[in-house]
Amino acid sequence: MCSGKLQTALLVAGYFVYLLVGAAVFQALERTAEKQEKMAAAQMKEAFLQNFTQLTVPEMEQFMKNLIEAIQNGVYPVGNESQFEESNWDFSNSFFFAGTVVSTIGYGTLHPKTAGGQIFCVFFALFGIPLNIVFLHRVGKMLSLLCKKLGKFLYEKGMRKKKITFLTLLFFLATGILVFLCLPSVFFQITEGWSYSEGIYFAFITLSTIGFGDYVVGKQSDRKYFSYYRVLVAIWILFGLAWIALLFNLLTTVLEDTEKIIVKDLQQIGKVSKDKLESQQRRCWPVQFIPEEERLPPRAGGDAHKMESLTADSEHTENEKKVFSNSKTNAITCEL
Image 1 (cartoon, rainbow, N blue to C red):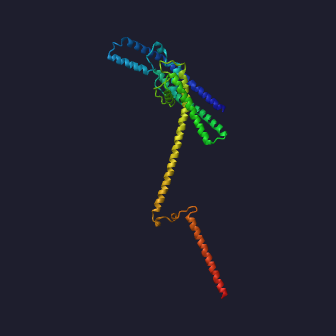
Image 2: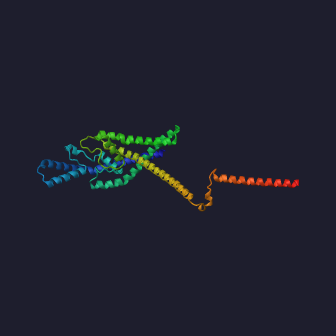
């Protein structure tokens, strides 16, 4: 037991150290290049504001291309210069990015642009994704143990096994939906200004690793976010992934069991239909074509048993008649 807890503690510590190191490396590799991009975007914006009345059509098209490229790179040239100083590659955002890499969510709104950052991202994901799978598996085991302890507690209270299974699954689903979907959606509604349905949508799309990228936390330039906001969201994602992975496994098991039950029922229905069809076909056959052993099918307490009883009774009666006839003949002989 102690060794298992020690292994879990070491795994969790190693996993978060790996993410912290990755975040620090991404920050060091990408922050300088991002500053240069933001300076270029600010200069482009200033030049446009000074000369927008004199721009030709080709110059306007080039400006639009540069603007789209800047937005795709995570640079939004809006607001004053102080907003340009805010980095997409500070430690909080870098940690969030590292978490989305190992969890394979991949929103696409933030990505490394330097050669060093891209090469490091490849090797970071190469070792980080298997580590993330091991981490999620261990967290899933911990959640399963909690459900087993709840089931054991209910069993000791004298509850039936079927009812225990139902209540345990209900507790697992209700708690997970509340902790990883409902409450975070309220938090996103307050922090991001989304509607509650948008918060639910973002939570599920994120935890299921679909990651469309249409909703991403901490990307609105007109909002002020508290420090390490995205770190907190990254930790929610990592533990939420373990819960939803167990949920998907549970649903897969339910579907497989349902499929087996349906197939079994269909096979039984097919067998009964086949037996009925063969019975109906035998009834239509002439008597001489029916095998002798099938003419009088044996049934418990049925006609065959009655026929055997009648045959035995008739034989017994005949024997009695013969005995009586012999005794009568002997008596007549003696009188003579």
